[in-house]
Length: 254
Image (cartoon, rainbow, N blue to C red):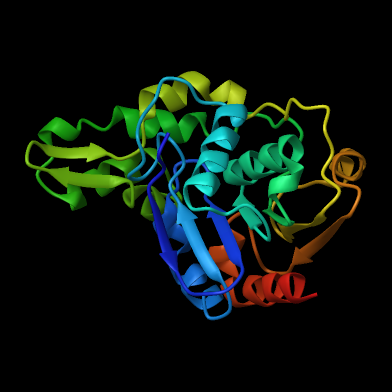
């Protein structure tokens, strides 16, 4: 699958993969700053953003998509992968199955293990919006706000809304995401290890990356270190972009 992407900067290559219901645009400001020293690629994973839709979606095929993207861009060495949440698991899967293709790995607020249901109510809220009858983005936002109390989440989801000649539609492939969601919340399936330098970054107020995953992380990523950014939740790059940027720069430069 040919993934949609944006490219900026010069230097050693860095690929950024977003989380569930996100897209490359979510990382635009961060990528722009990082591109002062690196060639940064932000990609839309399958069934997200402007990338193609497909019925099959799991971490194995997402890792294959990233691998194909790297090969298409002639990125065969010195590549750093940055992955947030679902994108972090896809990046981990690629590093574990094709370790020679990845030099460094940065995983933002997710671990390799299984997680409990955290998004079904969000997927249901999106699916419940009757887009065919909507005349403005404000109407869609108000209906979402009626189902979801968190205004920040609603603002994040509204980035998925696209106006076409036939009306509004969601960029994300909601039917498939709802169908495969249990798989996306499962743990990674691999017997491999990644011996390269790896950094796990977690938000201090997030409950995604817990202490009990440390053992599994060390088994799969023997060179891994874990760093916590204060006053940040799950969306570390939105809550503390400057702190995350310093952490990433330090990791890449050392």
